[in-house]
Each structure stands twice: as C-alpha cells, then as structure tokens.
Length: 171
Ligand SMILES: NC(=O)c1ccc[n+]([C@@H]2O[C@H](COP(=O)([O-])OP(=O)(O)OC[C@H]3O[C@@H](n4cnc5c(N)ncnc54)[C@H](OP(=O)(O)O)[C@@H]3O)[C@@H](O)[C@H]2O)c1
Image (cartoon, rainbow, N blue to C red; front, side, top):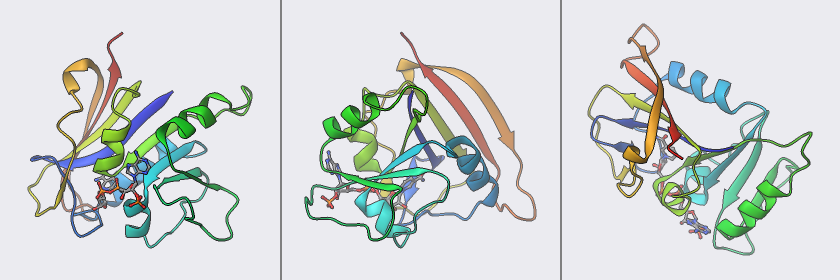
C-alpha cells in the first residue's frame, strides 16, 4: 500500500522556513506509530530541514534530482532520482518482508506522487500559522472516502487540538 501522511493547518499550511510550523508531540506520536517498521519517502528539502536526521525503525527514501547526493553511514537510507525508480523498488520488494510506503512530504513530493495513493493520513491542526508551503491543491480529497476521524484535544504537551483523518481511494 502507498499512502500519504501529513499535517496541515486549517488553511492548508504544512511548512515554514524548511520546518514544521508547530510542535505537537501527540501528532508526532501518531506519525511514528503509523510509519514504524515501514518505508518513508521524503524530498531532499524536508530531509535537510530535519538536519538530515534519519528516523529510527524505518527504511528512509530521499528524493532528489542530484545523481551524486549521498547520505553517509546509514544502510537504512535509499536515494532515488525518479518517481519510477521508487515504484520499481516498491514493487520488487520480497513479499514476506515487504514494507508499506508512506510518502511524508513536502509539497513537491506529494505532487510528484499524486495518483499513486491508496490511502491518505491527514492531520488537521486546529489553528492558523504563518507558512510558505501548502499542501498541494491538485490532490483531490473528493477522490477518497473518509474511513475514520479522531479528535485530539490540546493538553499540557500539545498547544493545539488536532484531528487525524484517514481516507481510502475510491476504486
Ligand atoms: N506538515 C507536514 O506534514 C510536512 C511534511 C513534510 C514536509 N513538510 C514541510 O514542507 C517543507 C518542504 O517542502 P518542499 O515542497 O519545499 O520540499 P520537498 O518536497 O521536501 O523537497 C523538494 C525536493 O525534492 C526533490 N524532488 C522533488 N520532486 C522530485 C522528483 N520528481 N524527482 C526527484 N526529486 C524530486 C528535489 O530535490 P533537489 O533539489 O535536491 O533535486 C526538490 O528540491 C518544509 O517546510 C517541511 O517542514 C511538512
């Protein structure tokens, strides 16, 4: 299964200055639980916005058009230059150990994989933030059916309430 997973504010903002606009440990816990032991794919800018920190317990795929891009000292990181190379890798996995693929952003990468998603994991953060990156409008939520919607209130660790929605592509 290929899924997109992201968090946006009520205006669709997903990023500012190369990073997330908010700090929400509860949302990160949802992200970790969903993607753990699977494969995550991100754009080079998102990876560098995380100071090239590789998230543990997951196969990490970085997308860049730079054929010489290297990530040092990590066997769990793959670098691909074309969407088709990612799809070939995904389909060629051993059936027993095959990982689901989670496209984790940013905006350019979500756009590049439009049309590939079986599922969407969309968090809406209930606030309005300054931002320079928005979730791409070409990805039409109307093509998907909502499977679940769970509300998380704000608390001492999370300044904003958020809602996690899961959608499935309408076949
Ligand atoms: N809220 C969320 O859930 C969330 C999730 C992820 C990211 N973000 C935020 O989004 C922002 C970054 O998003 P962004 O759109 O600017 O950048 P991005 O999608 O993270 O990365 C863009 C880069 O990916 C590579 N790329 C894009 N399309 C490609 C293709 N078809 N083939 C090969 N490589 C390709 C290029 O790398 P090269 O330039 O090296 O060729 C491009 O510059 C940050 O603020 C980040 O924090 C938010």
